[in-house]
Length: 512
View (cartoon, helix red, strand yellow):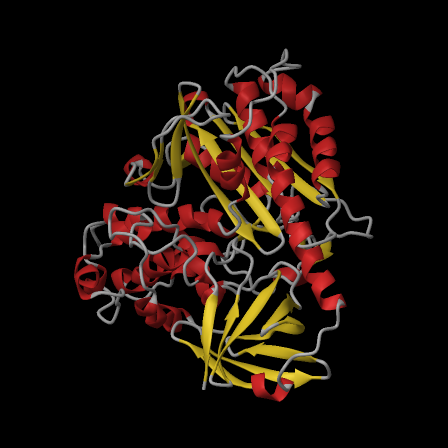
């Protein structure tokens, strides 16, 4: 998961009154039969989403596996139940299940130190390094901030081993084992333990052999490389910093255990049936119930306050899956976000209900609204239009972003002249986590190149003072101010910021 739009919407909701409730148009399977199609079509238009696929499993049967909209803007091919999407952090429960099965087979323990398997693994401080366990890295409790390090790691040319080497430079802002901070590198760490514990089976091979193949998930791929070449694949889009725009496919196989699975709703129906039948699929035992149960046990408290808009009070995190109460039932879910894609997978064992929603536009909460609308219908929650509700919370933030972008454009349009030559800003800059970037003059602009992202650049347009506007060639990365610092007439640093759904804090690079 990389784009926490729904979490932001929940935070915003605390300052809003919930819309008035109305009589539900339908419940459960009746909602799917009578209202799902019209509801989704309205949502796609409202949120500007090219395509969406949804699956609903109830009482062991697939009651819906439908596609809506198109795979690519300007092309007629529709989304259907076999259309592929990058499911990103919905990969995490596959990793958690793999680790849990190795516990069941007595090949490791959740409370084993990570360094028992990866002796060179280091966190920022020696005490945490010595204490950190497999349970810790799977529970997002290393003390680092949500997404910390992801600008460096995500979609980069770093190998898995390179990423694990850089983890030691991530200075925590929270307290080890006390502060929840969503961590992709934690799941990479767990995945890299698998070949050590199994005698050489990679994470991707373990997932393929022990989960995807037995579950008949023949149109699901553990690695993202080459996904865009498959015949029935959704193309990724964003509206994060302007009109709907295509973005490149992420290739995140270096983050595989955290984020690299590519799947479709027809295959995720198999995964949901497996979860709802306690580890069985088509009547055959695939994994022990104890393995699945272990993934669902809460290891980290994520929240304990009543939601202002949902019938939910407590949220915990297990081994790759969240858990919460929802109108007196226990629900399990995860979301997944990549550039151009946001998805979720949810199951409610007490109701024998499973839901998955896959979308190809990353700046929206409809992928969550639809899930909650279906939960409301099946769990007898009085009707609220969740799409309209969440849109109301998202609209001010989108408007603020649009204003910030427009304000930067207005400053560029003044065509101020910098007090120093653009050559004075040029050179190599370094950051202790990222490594090096280069800044070079290009006409009246500066161009920044990133050593670990060979296709990524950002163009710097002069604003005023020693501040430039940074515009990435990748639309999801964003448009932000990029200030230089100057001491005694010499340029010292450059601050680069990216979309906070990628990483929340800016990077300050020092000129060499």
